[in-house]
Image 1 (tube, rainbow, N blue to C red):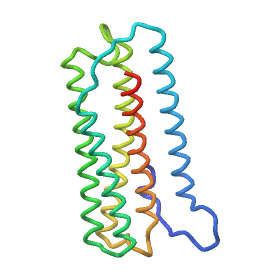
Image 2: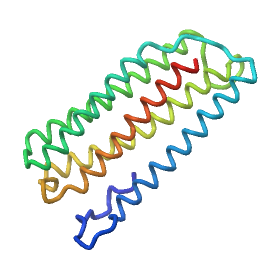
Image 3: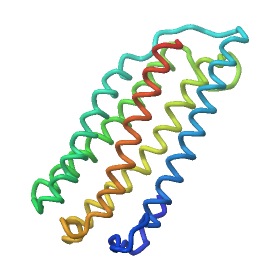
Length: 196
């Protein structure tokens, strides 16, 4: 996210949408379009044949639980900011960050499981089904890293008391993006379970 060095102003009472909220929704829409293209290509390529069927790594289910928990802690962080509960705010942001790191570690183990079963990305001996799985989880993982950067920025701001009931924009943006990443993962997980 490019919002790191932008001074964040609260919404004014003139109405309309804050420019950063508008920008975030444009980013989210572009990511949705990208994953819609990926999953459409997955279905089309699968129908063409030469498609290796294999078991999805079990860690993907664990990661699904982890990302749901991270969404809960992110929402609790926003609620804590609204209630000016600074201790709980910092704790929940820290837990969200920790769950995000756990999710990425889980993805790494998922990829290790694929390699152990001779499922590779591209190259000789690889199959499109494996490559698609790497792309879908890898691109989501990249966006999760951007979300972690955003969470870290909000956590740092909360340590300086720049996030509270009168300055909610930072955490609102972060919460929307984080929930979106969780929803996107749920979509991918269900998609892979139904089409694998």
